[in-house]
Amino acid sequence: MTSPILELQGAIVARLKADATVSALIGQRIYDAVPATPTFPYVSFGPADEISDDVDCVTGFEITMQIDCWSRSSGFPEVKRISDAVRAALIGTDLTIADNALVYFRHNITRVFRNPDGLTSHAAISFQAFAEQP
Image (cartoon, rainbow, N blue to C red; front, side):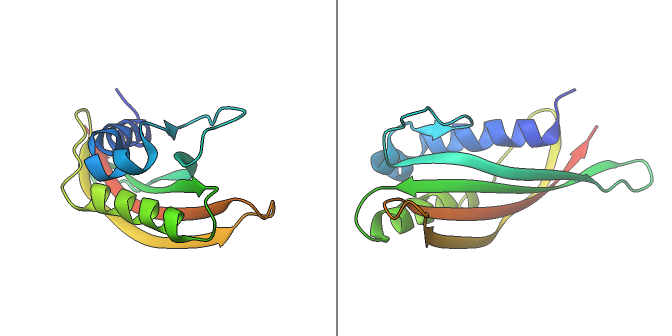
């Protein structure tokens, strides 16, 4: 049996790599573990939570997942374009997972800020999902 949060991450990676707009902005640079010297811009996975929310005969999980967008271009325009493309790719059509049932997947908030290095723009996109395990 596959963990819902792991299966959801796989579906997200597949969707982002298949999306023409996202690929035009970052290529295929979507990381779980960021390389020591990454090529900018790129997308990575941030913190994620999977909270049990069982009812009667249903094993359910409330999932919160952060996807991070990174840019070294001047200002915020590039990282804002990337974060908007990521959000649109994931919310625009239904995500599906094979082993578990994804009840919903929605965008919560996107925060854009400059990293302490003064060079890197960062967008943190928070999503919420609910999955049921068979």
